[in-house]
Image (cartoon, rainbow, N blue to C red; front, side, top):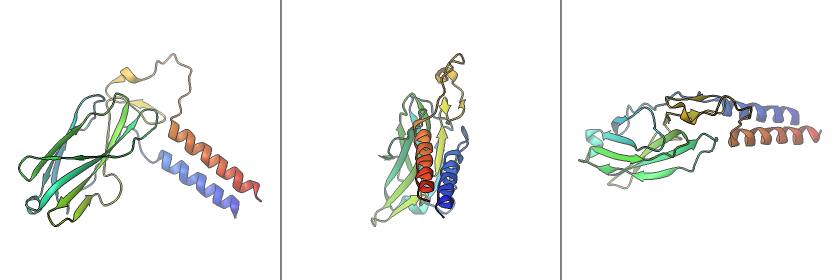
Length: 185
């Protein structure tokens, strides 16, 4: 039984590490939410302002007091920083704008929204997790380099193996767990 659990844990960790395809942006449908449309550039340029404009539905616009933009920046070494909350500025009650500046080694930006109404109710878009992922102009996904700006790519003459921190940690944890589980038998 322990061997089955160990193999299952290793398989789950391996699937989670390989679940996202490098350079492919992700976008959550906004149908049926308080958000009518979102405007943003579909590539995050490292070190430069990344702006967003959120247009609320007419029904929601009259009752909304705040729109929060929760972002998470992940960098080329495989580390994702803790999420940060940014309060968007209201242009006219329906249009909300904001910006962040991702650091030079940004791989991608994840984000979601929280819409606070005047009755103190909050709607999350999406309800769970992050709904959007926008890749930078120079990224590393753990296996490949990509993006429009190749200046951050390693020199091809390098014999150095690169393994991002979180993948190495997950791999070691999975191997350690499998070893402990099989050792008990």
